[in-house]
Image (cartoon, rainbow, N blue to C red; front, side):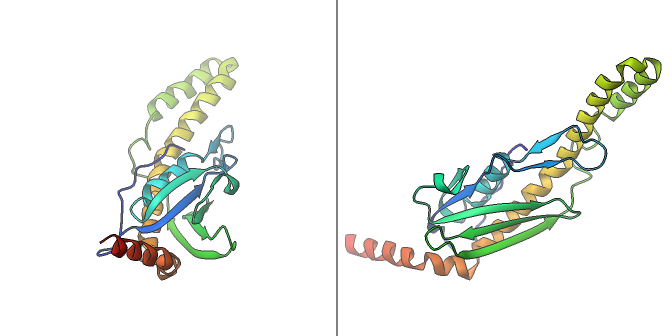
Length: 200
């Protein structure tokens, strides 16, 4: 999955929380394409994690992508994504305190694939020609079927990526006004305020 750029979002009148968040980009997170084009497996990371990183930059002071929790160093929170491929799809992000292992907040968003996104109808004419070529020359079936499946996977991605971007943006909006995250950040906000006063 290619990373999506998400406009930064912060609730009106709020500032970035002074927290470092590590988005877990597990490289083993994949999904099999639905229905009949099973020859392809979509690798979700680092694209999914980078999309969430882009979405959360308006909420938190620092947002990094790591492959595993142990690589996060001094992060204040882990953000662990989970994607369900039902229709509609559901993206859930859980924020965990790495010290206590407790869940600080969890947000979900649901979207269906965008059937009108650019690229959804790409290669259809080409695939019809390829299908006709198989009828004329059956020995080419394996190669041509693989190419048709690849085009079908590309069309699925064109509908899939905008839905991921919308869900990531929706979760960022929820996080921007969540009282649990604000409460978790409160001691750091107070220490930053105290340090500012002491320098005046």
